[in-house]
Image (cartoon, rainbow, N blue to C red):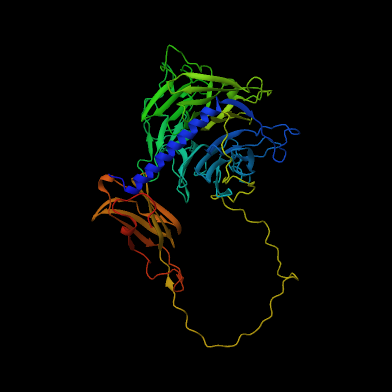
Length: 606
């Protein structure tokens, strides 16, 4: 289909801007020289003077994620003394404490927008113990915090009662496609249920959407228009459907409105060595940039009986094709240069066709030691391994800081790595990003709202009776002059539907936004002349700002939209001229032809 002139112009301008950006980036890279890893000291808040205060470890850092090279967040469990559990932020110049709430034992971070991100966090104490055996309520990595706004605040906190069929399970993975499409996943559901625990955020509420196969979910990464999810294969996993052989360790999650939501990736990868069981390979750690998706795994803790130990395995997805660049059969003559290691994470370095991997020894991975050194290596898309380094580098004057843990590369020549003991290392090529002048990650967040999903605790005592306080003096009674009663002013009902806007996503998905005055049943139809060519299911939506997504077929492009609504509560009334209009009580069909042209040109149309 021919693009509209305005869209072609936008593409042309974008292409020019991208070309200019590439040229500038290339010039900076040439001028900055080779990149090298360096220790990045951090200090307790308020004690940032290196002359008087030694640097400290932040405690276990569960995750480290960047929206841009000068906008990043990490989540920590705290070090038990000078650093509380919470979040730290990077603004291009320095790291600073961002939040003393929503920390986690092994948390995760998912950016949904430039001023919007989620964390998998620890729960707060206070829930009752299991009445059956006195077991305390589990708290580690079982709640969610939603940060949004500028400056950032915790706008939502989500949890569930423990020891119930619908209890949140421990979560290990998080990812977002947009501010209204995020996924969180982790352990299998408790018996007798079958499936992996998963939550979905649609912009308004969280809903449980478990996957029928009971393998625990270990990582989620966005690449292109999809999320990719990796699982850990283990003996005893409860499955509700036939498991393919070999089992599929990766699946794809489609954006809201696309079907099916989950697609197992039948790539015949990873390849296993002869007599190697799938359970011998640990879950794949995922990393992506604009060019490709990487996945890496090492031997699982404890090789299963009857299996040879697994090798470090690295997969690469590019140009709609998967390849195994390291592992069994990748290059039998060269052997495996990462033999004897386990993989903690992988991060592609943008523009380099290579990725950095964080490595550890099997012994230290089971019992992390503060005396271990961090090992990192660069692997290219052709499978060659280079720049294998042990950090801190000789001559830095810094002792061991623990094994390598999380690694991420927000730009070429710019990577960050955390250690198991809560320290940071930074790969730099001499250039630095401009400070983030518009950063929402300012100030210190010290409050977290009540957990949605948990019953709120009522105060033990009634509120103080202040009715007899001397400061309270009722105003004197002054009788008003009598006047003839006036007829009540006529009032009109507000419109059920208002603020309708449409937006075309990915050129074949229509997003319709609108405001509902009260709870209503809603369905969106797309018609081509008289024929219905697409429709959403009939949904019950609460009052407020809402949206629907409708996937379209470019071969049967609609010429008209109809939004069918039926109010489920009485519409409020207002005085004339205050935004009300008669009607709209139920069974309303709103023609949307005026919102959506025959070509459906991208952009918001009002």
